Length: 273
Image (tube, rainbow, N blue to C red; front, side, top):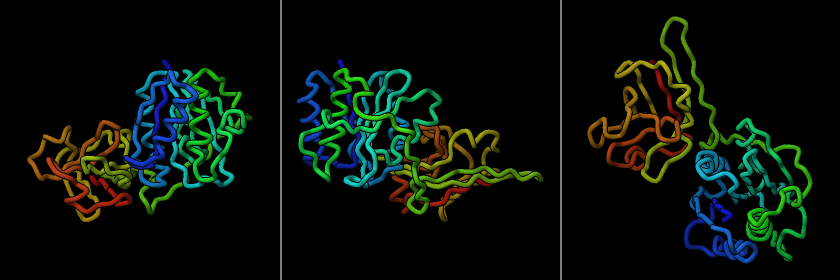
């Protein structure tokens, strides 16, 4: 049974997701449609890209992942379909949403979705998700070869860095030859529990000292040492740990770090030892 997942910034309860599902079911009624999230930050391309990178790998090979976070809808930005080596397909605007696929290491087949045969007869200038992307995803799930959708794409648009909005920071580690060092990054996302997700990956955290020898600062807030889990400290304590996405997180035990600390995406995070 074909599988199509949906990721958008449309929010819950509106008509837009329902209309996309109607198009999909009309063209590929045998497909199972799974909602990944419709709560991406409005026009939050970078956040949605991170979400797709960390989520879609858990689905079976051959699934079709349709993502619509499209602030450039109606402009000359391309819409692309991408197929990975295991037959998994992605359909999205070419605005950076799929840029992370280039670093997965496997071969990619990429096309621009341009063939009118595989879109709705009337295309709204403001809803390509319904009129172009949903039909393309449905046709792929129904067995259409990706090459039928349009010409080969030369590559995928990169994800532009919007550091002031906390959307695409670049964490760095600096070692001091005389001893000690520093890791700098920022908060890039806040999860549903109010935990602060940073752009500091676990690969930067090897060999760090324990306890008070390691200071973690976020804005004016401070904690010491890395914990293994949230329950390692008492309630209402600020803790730092590596979360399930292999990124450094800051959390308030049994409460919301977002509410308690008033921190927003883009806040600087520094580790010192």
